[in-house]
Image (tube, rainbow, N blue to C red; front, top):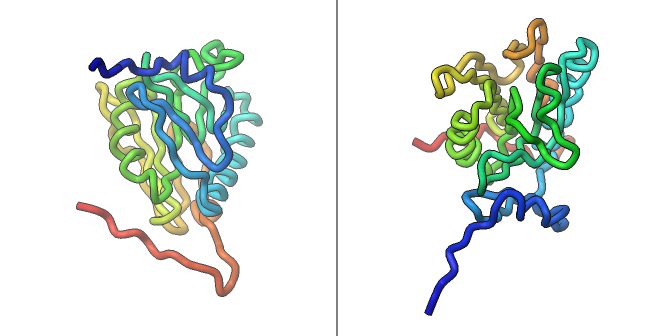
Length: 199
């Protein structure tokens, strides 16, 4: 008996069309990876950060900010960072139906199901792919980490948490009040404290 070991290519994956309701798909090493829809806390953080960055990028004509867009990282890998930024000089890397090149900045907002993926798998993949700046924003811990690619590896450049106001490359002069990014449930609603770190 012969067992097929053929991997799906990025081009084949991009022909699948829109995600089924309630899930989010990526292509990882030739296999379709499924993750659940965002939680309210995740959605608020992405929305607030996109407002802040979008206004800054537009007012300075710095380039293009995109949300949740298929990005090819290899023949068998398609990732979807929560936010992506391309400088004006690299606008030609954005095709009509897919991103041809790597973004200058990728932002991942962590959810309970994506912690290891964002901090390990994508951390290595984005560095290998040449993404110059990588931000990890964690609504559960209420933390922000900004990394810069140096000699093929990410180096921590910015860190903040709670109500800190942070500045992070590649945006000069932009201040990010972290308290505006976090979900504030209604009184009596479910609340979650910082998630313990695994060792």
